[in-house]
Every structure is written in C-alpha cells, then in structure tokens.
Amino acid sequence: MSSPSKRREMDLMKLMMGDYKVDMINDGMQEFYVQFHGPKESPYDGGVWRIRVELPDAYPYKSPSIGFINKIYHPNVDEMSGSVCLDVINQTWSPMFDLVNVFEVFLPQLLLYPNPSDPLNGDAAALMMRDRTAYDQKVKEYCERYAKPEDAGAVPEEQSSDEELSEAEYASSDEEVAGKADP
Image (tube, rainbow, N blue to C red; front, top):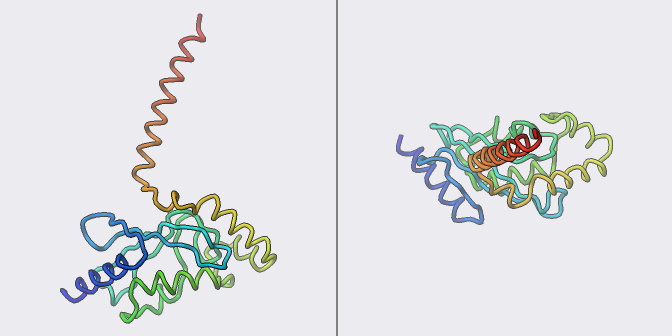
C-alpha cells in the first residue's frame, strides 16, 4: 500500500516542481486543481483552464480522473461537466505514465488533434467536420470568454459566497426602493 502512496506523492511533486500551479482540494494528495495552458499555435493558445484531478486509491495502476472546470469548446470534452474523452487516460492507462505526461502530452495532444468521430460534445464535433474555420473561431471565442487566467484561478467556493453577498445587497436595495415607491 505504501508504494502507490509514495508514487502519488512523487508524481504530484514532479508536477508542482514543473511550471504548473497546483491547488490542493483537501489535506490528502488525491484531489487537486492544476492550471493548464492551451497549446501554442492552436486555437486554444492563450486559454488557461482549471483542471480537476482525482487520483484513485490504486493510482498509478488505475488512471486519474481529469475534468475541465471552466468551459472549453471541444468535441471530446463534455461542455457541461468538463469530462474528458481521452483513450490514453480512460482505457489504455499504464503505470508507466505519470501526471506530467497528462499535462505535457495527453491534454495538449487532445486539444491539437480532436477526434470528432467519438464526441462528448456533438455540436463541436459537427461544426468541426462541417466548417473548420467556424469551429476554430468558436474555440477562440470560448477561450476569450471562459479561459482567461482569472477564470482558471477562481475557486468555486469563493464564487458562491460572493454570489450570496451580492444577492443580499440586491435584497436590501430592493427593500429601500419598495419602501419609497409607496407614498
């Protein structure tokens, strides 16, 4: 049992020592976020995504679970859940692979070479096969709208508390307006 936990620790440290920003979700080393930049010279260039990684107890013998937190337009990524359809991660995983491989090879390859014949996002796959220029433009629009550095660094828990605060502010201003409108 100590071998998988040592390997998990080692792989996580290699990722952290690279150019990746890693945010732990809890005290354990099994769930964390990684900031991922789109590959250069692609429609995803300039985009920054927050990727949720979950390592199973049997890691590295069982593949990690990988998902995009902020939206991305891609045939092999579910637009709503962020789930990734990637054979190397989901089916052909080997203990020879590590987390650095996921972020330096597998995800960049997925973005550079989408597979529209095995889609999780049917609209993206159809647009890509029908009109590659329009597809690339939509990818760039999504990057500008959802994949800015501040989108990848936002913590979901912090966003929800901000929303609650803004709702409370709106409620108090509504009461003031309602009170004045009744002379």
